[in-house]
Image (tube, rainbow, N blue to C red; front, side):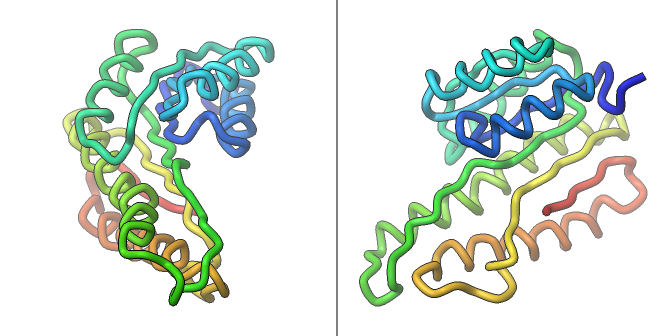
Length: 183
């Protein structure tokens, strides 16, 4: 039996390079994947790669900075493949810009996409997972969240936020059968 055989995965930011790599790998491990991206054509390209590799996947367009997007994503995933087992938060952006040159709007965009979307997704997924006492939320963090990076203040702050958020929520979930982690 494959490691993820029979598991339902929802993945945000699935139309990018990481989404393609993770999606194909999870499909080869047996998962069925709902690939979400703001760019439907990009999500579909990942779905095409997954199905070409013998996996099962659907493309779902959505803006992960909005809570309703996660309900729609999870509803579609569960209708197609069964109860949600894994949420993989990949969606993010990294504008390489000096802090003194960054506008407030640019800062907000990075924090909203990279960090708020993790909160929104985790909250929606965990609410579905807790009654079943089963599920995993995984989010992409970064070493820059610990060590920083020149021209990466907003990105570094968002990734540090993901690390802290994940640590706090993991304590809340202790003993529930639902897990959260970041990598």
